[in-house]
Length: 307
Image (cartoon, rainbow, N blue to C red):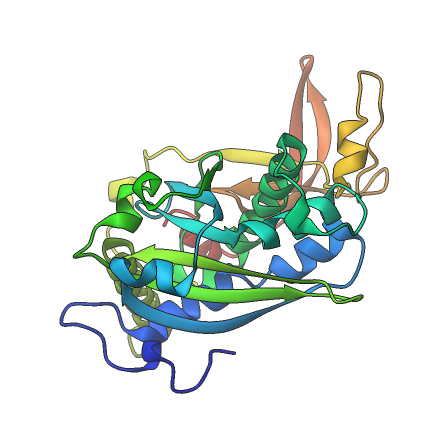
């Protein structure tokens, strides 16, 4: 939960995004963080949101002192721009060492390594995958991210422009991951002003669409659907999924077998815009693979995948 009485709960500047919309987005964004960390670390981990603030970027270093391990999360589809995920360097080392299966030596006496960086970025990729699904009811569109980039920030002069503009304001979402044996890592997610306004506008549109006009038929197609009938959408068939520890991924080699979460003969998932719309069975047509549909969602649900 967000801390009551924090600056985020006060009205923002004129034209800024409403805190409740940003709060809903933050809840969805981190909804899958706990389960993802639990799987990657093989121990129960919970993630709690500590606070939400709209602050001048000039005050950012006071909220989150350097040095940082800074990850840039840019959208490839669905939203514009991106976020920065900030870890204090000592906290990032705790997480990186835990993911790499290393011991519990004093993180302050160790250096950030490529193995730690790979492990943390892969874990954040898992969190982003969960966020893409969890945010669907809020923004009612498919989102995806570009490859994550990361850097060590020890000097304010090396901050990205989005975090160093003295007159800019941003939303700062603080969270922490906790687990057994005193495991605790704090981190923060930033949302720039332009992206925050886009999120707020999309959230408002989604709320209006969910309410719908009085008397509308829930399974009817929207007026003017003919205008987009020739638009192409990506179709994917998912055979199954698997979760693996970083150390097992590093041991993969040609000939290795990855066991999926589906049994032989189970239906495969058909996804449009990364959203499941049907189930089916694999068939062979003239030496090519195909899928025979066995079940499919309603027409109204299929139309939602076009957004």
